[in-house]
Length: 335
Image (cartoon, rainbow, N blue to C red; front, top):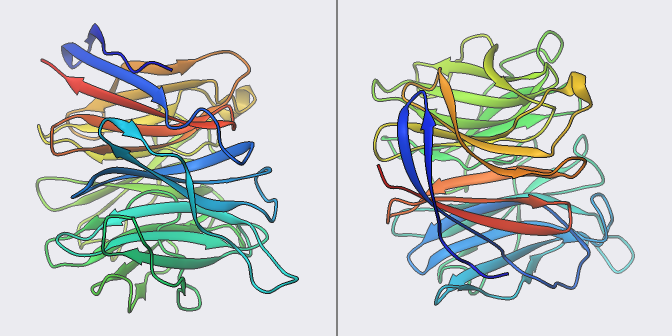
């Protein structure tokens, strides 16, 4: 697929916005038929994406694959982690999350196990931008690492990881480390999984120092909560104006003070449709206006986005395309 820029002018409640939009597949062919749950990071060497790929989700051959943007092109996928336990036992891998420690290691968190209710957290490290990786480390008992979306680095050096569990209802909690994943602290779940069933939070940081999360839910809407103490305690979850069909989202702070979220524009009541994938912007994290659709093809799946903003100011997104490939989109806001 050719990677060509397209220019749009979108009129939203945030004002008219000129957009330079590009998209392409990260790969056209791969040694696995199914891919899902991508993650994206900017390293000193450039963009890197990771995802899980194999026969299908939950199959024991599912591993963690990566690709790097080199000279304007994505490199062929490389498997960097798997769930092999012994010569006779192998489990699937799940939900990789990349994070570049400033001036230090590139971290790749992922999960291994038969299902999300039984999986455990793993971590590998790279000191050369993902060219080579350390021996896999199993995270301490009860620590899963960031469950789908990227951590945030707080001013005091704490890496705050948005996490969740599915073994006792869908519940959100937070894990933190001050030494790049060598030692950990963990909060209690912020919800009981009954009134609101939420997982996979994405963290936004506000100018006053408060934190906001946006979560996937079974409640037909993206859920939110706020913290005024660096993620130690959180307000009760409540619905936002954004619909959610029980599908993963991601969000990011933008350099101009706005916020961006990528989400499926549907509700679970209408069948959990993942065919409409949109990016929306907000000035305050509360009122959202769609910027543009990334995908809109009936009866198809476009899901599990990852979104960052790179040093050149562009919004970079990866997402699952029909469970077959990982697609990449790049947006320049030209207003």
